[in-house]
Structures are given as structure tokens and as C-alpha cells.
Length: 315
Ligand code: RIB
Image: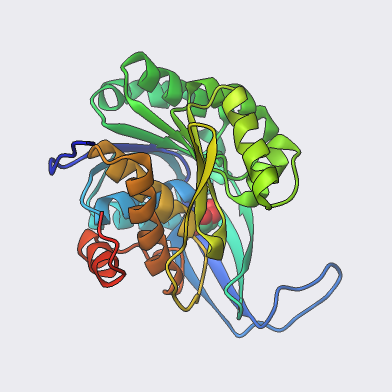
């Protein structure tokens, strides 16, 4: 039986901070098409920041290693992290650079498309991660994504691995060069698009998913979970494809759902839950976020537990 602890997990997120400029549209425009938007809003985002905020809301002691620009957006992002209970002492303000931005279109069917301009995220160096080595060494899990330079991601994974700290690599946005990092990852969490682009294996039928997940383990990842939107998520357990179905909700905005999923996985695995139980919890957490507008929609632990109790599937 898996033992788990009620101790507060300590999570370090190394990754991106963006300001999201979100436009609502009826449907995503086709190439060469112009559409009228319904409205816009500016919120804090970035896969790294979203993951850190979600982990903090889920009750983890959370630290962020990131770079922001010396502009009002950077100030706003740092203030948001602190207000959400994330330790931002390793968030470096880079002189002369702009904070990263993301232009996000959200359509009525809750789908989105995102263009990220890295800005200061590109200036997050391995040396900045080395400065946080003690923090990483004392963590229960380190979470990284790919909106910051790969050598920086590698540095975080190497420090964590050296100290036996669990590593979660969210390969988003997809970059085939990240395949070289998989031997340093305890868990890799692509979505279906990223999985196809990393492996070259298209298709979401069981055989294709099985082959693609297996392919990433052959590249060195210890475990792989693919997120499948409304279909939930899937992993390989002793070579067999196992699905965790998504909870039924009315989808409003899928932006950041993967970030919440990753943060929840990190928290629950750090508490000692099995992979499948952590997936069930993460699935509920991301379902709640999808039912709310904007990337800044992570639920609290109480909200996730209430949803799981309601679904009769409490871990
Ligand atoms: O995963 C959602 C995030 O992707 C957004 O917040 C945006 O900033 C991009 O990084």
C-alpha cells in the first residue's frame, strides 16, 4: 500500500513568467483571416508562474526561480507571486529587458491559441538556477517547462537529480531538443500535440498513444503521462496503457489547465501518492480550472477534495 503524508510538500518551479494579453473570440481565426474580438484582459501567466501559483493554492510550500523584466509587468508578476504565497526571492529582475508576454486567443468552444514572446525568460541562466541549488536540494519536487532556455532547464534537472529530488518535466512548448533531457526526468507530461511532435507518432488511438509513451521512456524518462483534454490523461503501468478519465465539467477556458495538472501532480507525488492517485487528483484540479476563465484559475486543495468527494473518487 502506498503511504502518503500530510506534511506540506516543498515544490520548486523553475520556469517562465509572462503577462497574458487574452482576447475572447467566437472562433480561432484561420490563416489570413481577420476576426473581431469580444473583449480583452491582461493577467499574469506563464507556464512556470501558473504552476507555482497552483502549487501554492494546493497547499505546497512553493518557490519560484525565474526572470522578469524591469518594467511594470515584472513588478505585477512578482507582486502576484508573493500575494499567492509563492517565495519569489529567486525571481531576478533583468535590467533592460521586458517581461515575457503571451498573446492568447480564447474561443467560445474553450480552445485557445497562444504566442509567447520570451523577453526576460530568455535571460534565465543556469547560474541563476545554481544560486538556488540549496533550495532545489531541499525540495520534494522540482517542476520545469520549456519557455526558458534548455541549458537552464538542464541545470535545474541536474541539481535535482544529484540530490535525489523528484523531477517533473512539462515539455511545453514542444522542442525536440528536449529529448536529450529525458534521462534527467522522473516524470514527463506532454499534452497530445507535444507527444506527437516529440515522438513523430501521430494519432490518439490506444496503439499510437502506447507507442508514443513507450518511445519517451526509451529516451530515458522514468514515467510519462499524456494529457488528453476532455479525454483525461493516460500513462503506462508496467507496459499497459492506463487512462484516468476527465471529470465532466462545462469548459470555459482551457488556458493553463496543463499547468494546474502539473502542479497538482507535483504536490500529490511529493505527498507520497501513487502515480494513478496523483493523476486522479490532478485531473480534478485541472477540471476546476477549465471551468473558470483565464490561466489564473487554479483551485484550492479544499475545492479539489470537494470535487473528488462529489465524484465519489476521493484519493
Ligand atoms: O499554459 C498557459 C500559459 O502559456 C499562459 O499563461 C501563457 O503565458 C503561456 O505561457
